[in-house]
Amino acid sequence: MSITLTSPNDEGNNYAANLKLSSTVGSKNIPVRLHVNGPAILHVVPTDIKFILDPYSRDEKEFIIKNFGEQMLQWHVENIPSWIISVTPDHGSIAAGKETSVRLNVKAPGQPAMDIEGCIVVRSNVGDMAVHIVLHVEDLTPDLEVGGYLDLKCKPGELVTGSFKVRNAGKEKSLLDWRIVSWPEFGSNWSFDQMQGYGLKPEDGDLEVSFSFNAPDNRDHFEGCIWVENMHDGNDFALVHLRLSTPKNPLRYPGLNKVVSGYLLPYQKIFKSLNYYNCCVEWGVLSL
Image (cartoon, rainbow, N blue to C red):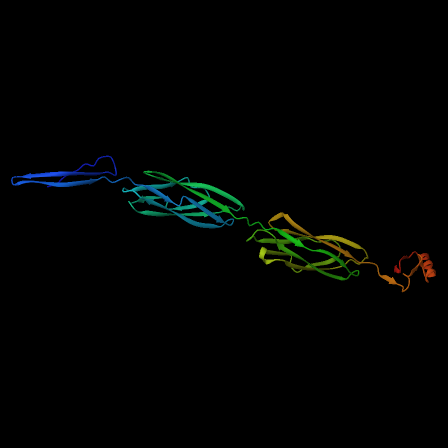
C-alpha cells in the first residue's frame, strides 16, 4: 500500500493526522505527521571588513555565507568595487545548515593617506545582504631634512673638508630616495662621498655625507648652498648653507694695542708710517 501526500504552501509548518485502516477483522488508526520544509535563510558574517595596506600592496580577507534554512540557498555576488581584484567564489549553492567561505583579494592604490569605501552585495533566492568594506591606505610619505650650517675658514687654495646630515623625518615605514642636485660655484674639485641614497628609513637616523673642495685662490668671503632633494618629490628639498672665508694674513705687533687715554703708545711713529703706505691698523692688527 502506498500513500501520496501533497504538502501545503505554508512552509515551515507541521501537520498531524490519523490514517484509519479497516479490514474484515477490524480497523486500526495509523498516525501520520507531515513537516513542510522552511525556506533557505541567508546569513553573512562579518558584514564589515577593513583592510589597512601600504600603497600598491595586496591582502586577502574572507567572509562566510551561511544557510540557516531548510531548503537550498542559491547565491551570487554583485556590485564589486574596482579595487577588489577578485572574489572567489562569486556564486554557488549552499545546502541547509551548510556554509561557504568567500575570499576577497584587494590591491591598494598608489595614493597614500586615504580611505576608500565600498559594498559587496550578496544576492540570493531568499533575499540580499551587503558586506561593507573599507580600505585604508597608509601614509608612507617620506620627509627630507638636512642638518648643518657650515661656516668655514681656510687659506686660499687650501683643501676644505666638511659634512652635513640627511635624515628621513617622514611617516613610519616610509622610504626616502635622495640626491644632491647642486653645490656652490666657488672653489674647485668638489667631491662628495655619496651623491645619492635609496631607502632611507626614519629609524635609520642621521646619515652623514662628507664633501671636499679646493678653496678659491683669492682672499674673500664666499657664500653658497648645497641643494639636496627627494628624488620623487621636487618640492621636498633642503639647503645646506655654506660660508667660506679666506681672510687676509694678519701681522701682529706686540704692544700696538696698548692704549693710554685713547692714544697709541709707544708706537705713534709706526702708526703714522703705516698710514703713509695706505695700510690699515685695527687696534694692533695690521692687514696688508
